Amino acid sequence: MQHRESERRPVKGTVYKRCNCTDPVTRKELRKRCPKLSRSDHGSWWAMHDIPPGPGGRRRRASLGPYATSTEADQALADSLAQLNPGAGTTPDNRDLTFGRYLDWWIENRADLKPSTRRGYSKHIEIYLKPGLGHLKLIELRDDHFDELYKAMRQVGRDQGTRRPSFMLQRLLEVRRDDPARRRPLGATTIARVHATARKALNDAVRRPSMPLRANPSMHAERPKPRRRPALLWTTPRVAAWERTGRIPSPVMVWTPAQTGAFLDFAAADRLYPLWHLVAHRGPRRGEAVGLGWPEVDLDAATAFIADNDPGIDDPFDDYGDAEDETTKSRASDRTITLDRTTVTVLKIWQRRQNAERTAAGDQWVECGKVFTHPDGRPLTPDGVSQRFDRLVTRYTTIRREHAEHGWDIDRLAAYHRMPAASIRAALEQGPLPPIRFHDMRHNAASLTYHATRDMKAVQNLLGHASIQFTGDIYTTLFEEADRDAAEAAAGLVPRTNLPDGWADFQNSSDTTEAAAPDPGETKPPGIEGPDLGL
Image (cartoon, rainbow, N blue to C red; front, side, top):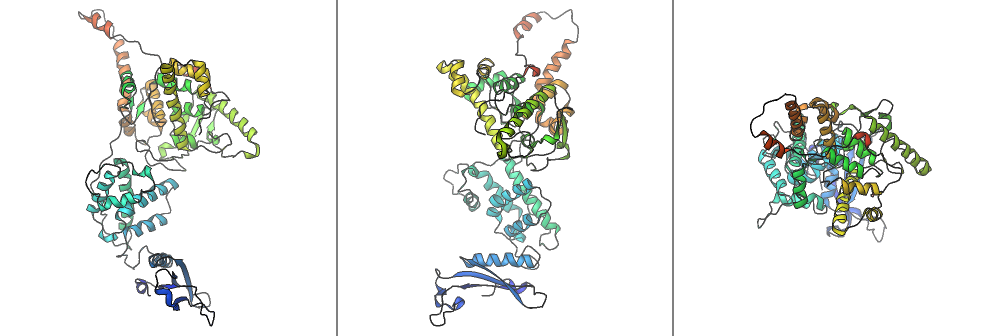
C-alpha cells in the first residue's frame, strides 16, 4: 500500500507485507504473492523508499524491516524519510506533526546541550510530556492541555479515593508501572522543571519558520510555584522533639558546630572521612566533591579549583537544582576555594592512603584522576556517597540506642559495629545526632563561614551561588542564630552601672551554658584502616 503521506514528500515510500514461503514448483520465494498473507499471524511488515541516485544516476531503494505490525513499519518509514527530507514532520508545513514526534526531533537535534541537561530533558519528555500530550498535534496544543497535565502530575502517588483517575493520569501512571520509585508524589519543583522543558521546546518551535506555531501554548498554564525551603538549625528544643516524635521540622536541616564536630569525631576512622571533612568545612556540592580532580588541588598553596560536577539523581530540595554533568552550573560555580590548614593535613593523609591503595591494586588500579575514589581507583558515585553518609548518621543513633536500651559497653559496641573505641565513645559522649541529608553538610560550611565573618558575600563566594539574594533567601533563618550572637556581643560593648530593679532576678534565671564548638585544629585525622560501609 502507498504510505499515506508519501505523495507530499520529495521522496516516496511504501509499506507492505511479505513472507519467506516458497513456490513448491519453482522454489522461489513468494514474498508478497503468498496467499496466506491475509492472516494476522503470517508474514512480517516491511517498508521501502527511494534514496538519492548514485553517481551513475541509477535508481536506488532502501528496505526496512521486518516489523511485527504495520504501525511499526509505518513509523520506521516516516523516521527514515525524515532523515532524507529535512524537517520534523510528515508534511512540508508540519501541520500534521504531533507534539510527541516534535519533542523526539527537538531533543535529537539540539547540539548545544550538556549531557546531564539532555538526560533531564529526555526524562521529562519520556515520562511526562509524551505520555500526557504527545498524541496531540502541535497546532492543537492549548494552555488548558498543560493545565490538565500539571493537575494529573499533582495526583501521581496520591490517594484518589473513589474517584476514577482521569485519562491523563492513567497515561502518566502507565509509564510508571515498572518503576515504583516514579510512583511517589511529585512536588512543585518537579512540575516546574517539566514545564521549563516544555516551554523551551515550544519556544524553539515558535522561532522556526518550518513549524506551524506562532505562540507558545504553555506560557499561561496554571502550575504550582515551588516553595524554597529554608535551612533550619537543629537547636536543642528541635532535637528533643525529634527524639520524642521522630519528626523532622524541615527537609533542609543544619547541624550546629558541636553536632558537626560530633559527626566528624565519630567518622574519623571512616575511609571517606576526608570527603566528609572537606564538605563540612568548605562546602562544595556533592557532585563537585565527587568530581574534584587532583590537578585542581594545590596543597602547597592550600587551594582547590571547583570546575567539574557529577550531580547524580536530582534532589527536589537541593538549592542547586538541575545540575550540569561535566561542568558546574554557572560562572559563579567555577571558583577557587581556600583550604584551611587542618583540611590540607587531612587531604595529605588521604593522598598518602590513595597512593598505598594504588600500589596494592597494581594492574587492577583504575586511573580516573579524581581525589576521592574506591580502593581500586574507580570514581565514586554521588548517590553512593549520600547513602554511605546516611548509614553513618543512622549508625551513630543506633549505637546510642543500643547502649541505652541494652547496656552494651564501648568494647562490645566497637566489636559489633567493627569501629574503633574512640568513635563509639564520641557517639556516646557528645549527645544525639539528628538526621540531615549529605547536601546539608554544605549548609554547615555556610553557617560556619557566616559565624566567623558575618559576611554574606563571603558565603556566596564559598558556595558558588550566582546571586547573593539567593544565598540570603536560603540561609536567612539559619543566620538568625549567628546574628543573635552578634546582637549579644554588641550589647555587651555598652558599659552599664545602674540597672533597673529586678534585673538580677531575670538575668540569673536566663543564664545558660552552651556546649562549645570543637576546635577545628583538634579534629582527628583518618586512619589508614577503617570500616567499609558498602559504598
